[in-house]
Image 1 (cartoon, rainbow, N blue to C red):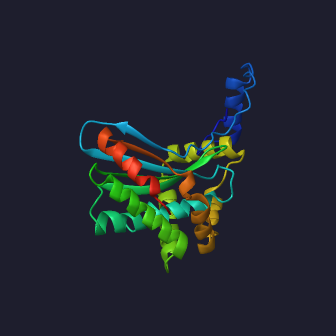
Image 2: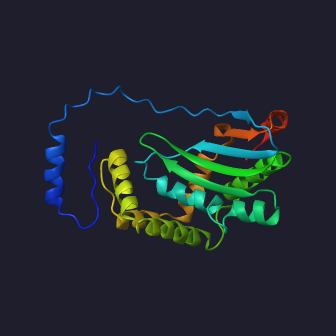
Image 3: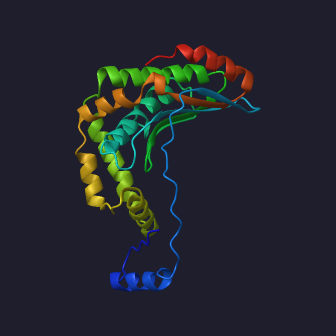
Length: 238
């Protein structure tokens, strides 16, 4: 358990309150050693009735203590975070095939995930998956375009700083960082870690993480069409 306080507080008073409130609690029994989940590279269909398709594509990512997690976050940002990202521009703006599409990177104590999500019609889901694969391949083969990394850094840092305007968000982020890494990372340190990422780092993470044989995909869409698309996509390659 961690006690986190932010704002105009007296640290000594917080420590005294926490001591009075929790020192008499009996220690929790020791937990069993946790085993990190194993990746399950498979295609899965979760049927629904209407013609909408909600598709998630995922790869094993970086844990909360992996120093490469910042490079992976920027990889996800370039690929699918915001309206200037590759997936948004190529698949939503140029092709007009999705209502929404984005990529993200999540980190946990002993594992992580790189995820891509989109929603479209069931008739287009297979085509969109192949277009996503095409953009992954382009990033892995060609690397970054001029100015792309700096735009992604500005976006990621802007989102991070805006979230710090809320005392509750500051408190939650400090608590999560401490519980998952054993230290409370300052905002300045996090921003420096983002700035330190290079184009080579992003290119390397794209090639390291987004591997076809580690792809897990779920289609929440009409069953018959989705089973057909899943079978057709077995030759997907990037």
